[in-house]
Image (cartoon, rainbow, N blue to C red):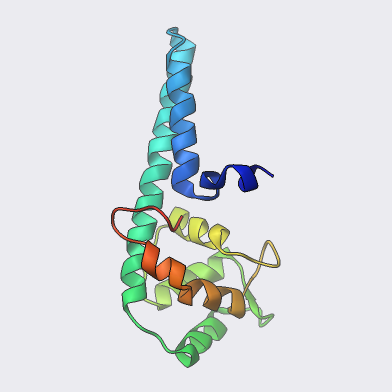
Amino acid sequence: LIFKDALFLKFLWGRGCLYFFVGTLQLYRMDLWNFIAGGYMCAIGALMMLVGYRTAYKLKNMRKSLYSTHELQAKFAQNDLDGDGGLNVQQFRMLTLSLGLDMTRRETEAAFNHMKKTSSEKLSYDEFHAWWTSAEMVDNVDENAFSFV
Protein backbone atom coordinates (compact mmCIF):
# COMPACT_ATOMS: atom_id res chain seq x y z
CA LEU A 1 0.00 0.00 0.00
CA ILE A 2 2.86 2.38 0.78
CA PHE A 3 4.49 1.72 -2.61
CA LYS A 4 1.18 2.59 -4.27
CA ASP A 5 0.89 5.99 -2.58
CA ALA A 6 4.58 6.87 -2.18
CA LEU A 7 6.16 5.68 -5.42
CA PHE A 8 9.53 7.25 -4.64
CA LEU A 9 10.03 4.60 -1.93
CA LYS A 10 10.38 1.95 -4.65
CA PHE A 11 13.73 3.47 -5.53
CA LEU A 12 16.90 3.35 -3.49
CA TRP A 13 17.41 7.08 -3.91
CA GLY A 14 13.84 7.71 -2.63
CA ARG A 15 14.41 5.72 0.52
CA GLY A 16 17.72 7.54 0.95
CA CYS A 17 15.95 10.90 0.70
CA LEU A 18 13.43 9.78 3.32
CA TYR A 19 16.20 8.65 5.69
CA PHE A 20 18.03 11.94 5.18
CA PHE A 21 14.85 13.90 5.89
CA VAL A 22 14.14 11.92 9.06
CA GLY A 23 17.75 12.44 10.15
CA THR A 24 17.45 16.20 9.76
CA LEU A 25 14.28 16.14 11.89
CA GLN A 26 16.17 14.22 14.55
CA LEU A 27 19.03 16.75 14.47
CA TYR A 28 16.54 19.48 15.39
CA ARG A 29 16.18 18.09 18.93
CA MET A 30 19.68 19.41 19.84
CA ASP A 31 20.90 16.93 22.45
CA LEU A 32 23.73 14.42 22.19
CA TRP A 33 21.74 11.23 21.52
CA ASN A 34 19.46 12.88 18.98
CA PHE A 35 22.47 14.44 17.28
CA ILE A 36 24.14 11.01 17.02
CA ALA A 37 20.95 9.31 15.76
CA GLY A 38 20.18 12.14 13.31
CA GLY A 39 23.73 12.20 11.98
CA TYR A 40 23.60 8.43 11.50
CA MET A 41 20.29 8.63 9.60
CA CYS A 42 21.61 11.45 7.40
CA ALA A 43 24.75 9.44 6.62
CA ILE A 44 22.73 6.32 5.75
CA GLY A 45 20.42 8.39 3.54
CA ALA A 46 23.35 9.97 1.70
CA LEU A 47 24.96 6.54 1.27
CA MET A 48 21.75 5.10 -0.19
CA MET A 49 21.47 7.98 -2.65
CA LEU A 50 25.12 7.50 -3.67
CA VAL A 51 24.73 3.74 -4.15
CA GLY A 52 21.59 4.33 -6.24
CA TYR A 53 23.41 6.82 -8.44
CA ARG A 54 26.46 4.59 -8.92
CA THR A 55 24.32 1.57 -9.74
CA ALA A 56 22.32 3.53 -12.32
CA TYR A 57 25.51 4.81 -13.92
CA LYS A 58 27.09 1.36 -14.12
CA LEU A 59 23.93 -0.18 -15.55
CA LYS A 60 23.74 2.53 -18.17
CA ASN A 61 27.27 1.67 -19.28
CA MET A 62 26.48 -2.04 -19.25
CA ARG A 63 23.46 -1.62 -21.49
CA LYS A 64 25.60 0.10 -24.11
CA SER A 65 27.18 -3.25 -24.85
CA LEU A 66 24.79 -5.36 -26.87
CA TYR A 67 24.16 -9.02 -26.23
CA SER A 68 21.89 -11.13 -28.37
CA THR A 69 19.05 -13.10 -26.81
CA HIS A 70 20.98 -16.30 -27.45
CA GLU A 71 24.09 -14.96 -25.70
CA LEU A 72 22.02 -13.78 -22.73
CA GLN A 73 20.32 -17.18 -22.45
CA ALA A 74 23.67 -18.97 -22.59
CA LYS A 75 25.19 -16.76 -19.90
CA PHE A 76 22.07 -17.09 -17.75
CA ALA A 77 22.19 -20.90 -18.07
CA GLN A 78 25.91 -20.94 -17.21
CA ASN A 79 25.22 -19.10 -13.97
CA ASP A 80 22.17 -21.18 -13.03
CA LEU A 81 24.23 -23.62 -11.00
CA ASP A 82 21.18 -25.38 -9.52
CA GLY A 83 19.65 -25.96 -12.95
CA ASP A 84 16.22 -24.91 -11.68
CA GLY A 85 15.77 -22.04 -14.16
CA GLY A 86 16.25 -19.30 -11.58
CA LEU A 87 19.08 -17.27 -10.10
CA ASN A 88 19.60 -16.23 -6.51
CA VAL A 89 21.50 -13.07 -5.59
CA GLN A 90 24.94 -14.72 -5.67
CA GLN A 91 24.27 -16.32 -9.06
CA PHE A 92 22.93 -12.99 -10.34
CA ARG A 93 26.19 -11.35 -9.22
CA MET A 94 28.17 -13.96 -11.17
CA LEU A 95 25.94 -13.26 -14.21
CA THR A 96 26.57 -9.51 -14.02
CA LEU A 97 30.31 -10.13 -13.77
CA SER A 98 30.18 -12.41 -16.82
CA LEU A 99 28.31 -9.66 -18.68
CA GLY A 100 31.15 -7.26 -17.92
CA LEU A 101 29.53 -5.24 -15.16
CA ASP A 102 31.64 -4.65 -12.06
CA MET A 103 29.01 -4.02 -9.40
CA THR A 104 29.55 -4.04 -5.65
CA ARG A 105 27.61 -6.42 -3.43
CA ARG A 106 25.18 -3.64 -2.43
CA GLU A 107 24.65 -2.57 -6.03
CA THR A 108 23.96 -6.16 -7.06
CA GLU A 109 21.44 -6.58 -4.26
CA ALA A 110 19.75 -3.30 -5.18
CA ALA A 111 19.42 -4.36 -8.83
CA PHE A 112 18.22 -7.86 -7.88
CA ASN A 113 15.60 -6.51 -5.46
CA HIS A 114 14.40 -3.97 -8.01
CA MET A 115 13.49 -6.59 -10.59
CA LYS A 116 9.95 -7.90 -10.61
CA LYS A 117 10.09 -11.56 -9.60
CA THR A 118 7.29 -14.08 -9.27
CA SER A 119 9.32 -15.81 -6.56
CA SER A 120 10.96 -13.55 -4.00
CA GLU A 121 14.18 -15.57 -3.95
CA LYS A 122 14.76 -16.62 -7.58
CA LEU A 123 15.01 -14.63 -10.79
CA SER A 124 13.82 -16.39 -13.94
CA TYR A 125 15.30 -15.78 -17.38
CA ASP A 126 12.10 -14.13 -18.62
CA GLU A 127 12.13 -11.71 -15.69
CA PHE A 128 15.82 -10.96 -16.22
CA HIS A 129 15.34 -10.48 -19.97
CA ALA A 130 12.35 -8.17 -19.43
CA TRP A 131 14.46 -6.07 -17.05
CA TRP A 132 17.50 -6.14 -19.35
CA THR A 133 15.63 -5.04 -22.47
CA SER A 134 12.96 -2.74 -21.04
CA ALA A 135 12.87 0.54 -22.95
CA GLU A 136 12.10 2.43 -19.74
CA MET A 137 15.32 1.21 -18.17
CA VAL A 138 17.49 2.02 -21.16
CA ASP A 139 15.98 5.41 -21.96
CA ASN A 140 15.45 6.84 -18.47
CA VAL A 141 18.72 5.94 -16.81
CA ASP A 142 21.30 8.61 -17.25
CA GLU A 143 24.09 10.13 -15.22
CA ASN A 144 21.80 12.83 -13.82
CA ALA A 145 18.82 10.68 -12.84
CA PHE A 146 18.33 7.93 -10.32
CA SER A 147 15.33 6.41 -12.10
CA PHE A 148 16.80 2.92 -12.13
CA VAL A 149 17.08 2.13 -8.50
